[in-house]
Structures are given as C-alpha cells and as structure tokens.
Length: 149
Image (cartoon, rainbow, N blue to C red; front, side):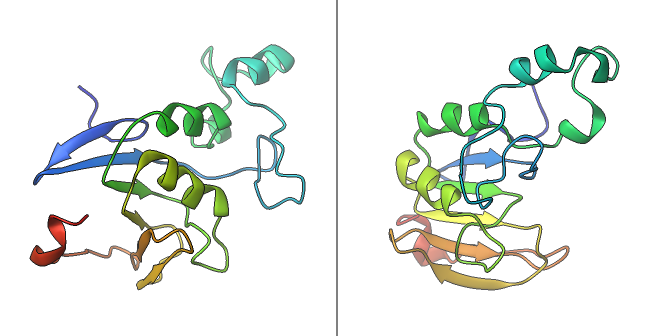
C-alpha cells in the first residue's frame, strides 16, 4: 500500500480525503499560461514524443513531480470531502482556478494546500473552503466542522 495519498482517496476520522501532489510545469501544462490547454494530457504521450529523455526507463526526473491532466481527470470521477494539494487554488495570488473546479467536481468541501508557505483561510466562489499551510504547518481540524467537511 502506498504511503502517500497522491491520486487516491483514504478515509480518516470519518472524512474521505483525496490527494494531488506535484506542481504545474509549463513543459507539460501550466493552467495560467493564457491558453489553459495542456501540451501533454498523458505521461505516455510525452514519453512517445521524447523517448531519449527517459530516466531509468520512465519519465525524466523533473517530471516525476509534475501534475498531468490525466491526474485531474482521474480524480474528478472520485467523491471526497477534503482535497489535499501541493499547489494552491485561486484563493492565493499564485494559485490555480482548475483546482477549485476539480474540488467542485469531486464534491469537496475543503482544500488544504502547502507549497506557498503561507497560513491563511479563504472561501472560493464555488463555496469550497481553503486552508493554506505555512512552512511545516499543521492544521487542527475544528471538531464542529468535521461533520460538515
């Protein structure tokens, strides 16, 4: 069993928690580049176009932590209460609207993210609550919100 929640859902404390690790990279897909269209939807498409760039028979090292559209497509079909991401949604100036869209498709009530090392709470236009964690931050879930997550 994997020790991470990237790309899957676990149950903890009565909540269904989904994970999306990684970062958006312009070489694959950067939803803020203006077009929003990915250069590559799937890892296999990229590998087919750049067969010489493989590392140990698979993706180059820099793309092992990239977010691919296929990752969001797979999660969009899963129901969860909480989405834990590395990247921030649009509640942060350096965040991405697509993460709020994903959360809405999944029925998520709360996104918890890291990456930008800034502690804050916000609510997206679609009603999804956002919690940004500071560097090495910890978020203690309020007991009264657990049922409404």
